[in-house]
Image 1 (cartoon, helix red, strand yellow):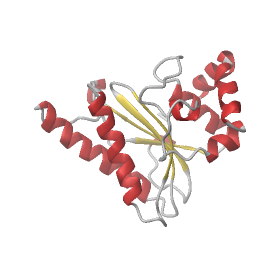
Image 2 (cartoon, helix red, strand yellow):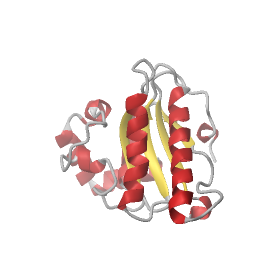
Image 3 (cartoon, rainbow, N blue to C red):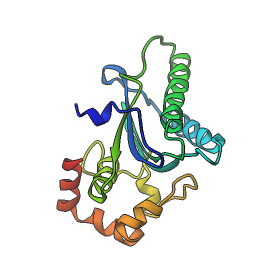
Length: 187
């Protein structure tokens, strides 16, 4: 595992691809209410963050046993991992209560991979939106927002539009199956 996954000393306004996975790869999302709870808690925590340190949500994807969150840290880069940790902890407590279980819900607190180059940013979007397979997911994924299928006021598309040019550029990129599969493999 790359050392960049273990970093916790992010820089201001850094782009970070966070992942959380179920303990022993177990399901952490059993139904739509589970998916919504995690994402709504994350959105609420972003909204409640002081403007000066507020991170920006760039993308996400939720599978049955793990979650991807792509964010731009705010001016205080320690706030963003704390926000992810708090969301995960809150979800784990709620999950155990709702499902009548105890113990670990997540494999580890989270992993955060820094993306700095345009190539890494493209690869992050490809990896997130094509996870866990090579089909674009519009359910429980920010791809639906980027494709124009639903509105999400919490997602800031400025980075994606800078990289892909526009919604049309984004869609053209993801319609090029060979190129997007290569980007997913490189992520």
